[in-house]
Amino acid sequence: MIAIATTSFDPRGSEKRTITSVDKTDVNSPIIKFAEPLINKHFAQIQTFGSDTIDTRAEVGLLTRNVVFRGDPETSLKNTYGATIFIHSAGDDSVVARLSYIELTDVGQKSQLGRYAVHFHMIGAIHKSYVKGLGLHQGFNRAFTIHGNSHLRILNNFVYDVFGHTVFIEDAAETKNYIEGNLIM
Amino acid sequence: MEVGTEEAPYTSKITITLHGQIEDPYLPIYGNKVLGVRHATLDMHGVKREPVWTTMKETADVGATQITLSE
Image (cartoon, rainbow over all chains, first blue to last red; front, side, top):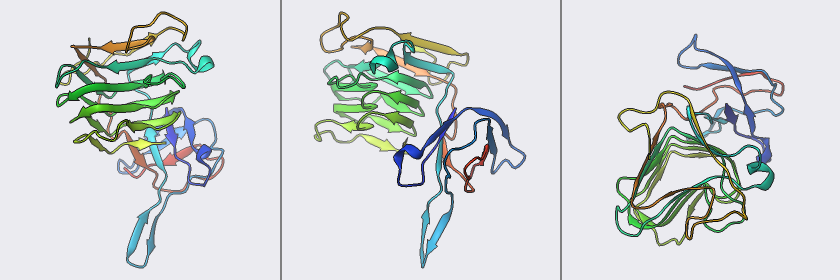
């Protein structure tokens, strides 16, 4: 499953689609096909203004993975009360969480303080932990929270359709965390 | 807890589902419907997917059933 970014002023113009096939005849520009027609136009062009070029191509992200962590589909959406991963013990490197290329869905608990999809809480330095290449969708609270931690890496994730801030740096006193290459839609 | 490792990601399909409601019993600090990690190591690694996201190469119009990617 993929999601295609809105390119209008309406944030609800993004669209989720299930892939039916991929045509890799031209390996440098694969064609992704899906059954349900797009409701909105999605603009894609690199524009030039004098000496400046601006990339205004719609982003496309992959949501699904072979490893899935989720809240139960029967009640999570109905109650906006999903599953969470809460990483906490006090002391530098007292806990390690390494997450890569997994899917999180029906996660986070709406309006509940601290109940985020992936919450690193008051640990200190966490040199060994990272969150990389995740597909996270249908979240009911913030996606990734850094609270009282340093040296955490949040890299190349795709997050679609969550409530509130997606990457939350809680106290603004956190330093030396590395957040790069994430697509948030 | 381990679902694959950095060196050997999990290659089969697996779905881990947590159940629970707001009024259910909960752990101090960690809450409920939670995978709590304390003085421990959590490894969860799926099959590497690159790129995780990219851009479209060409504009897709209303009604399109395919898109062309830029990589």
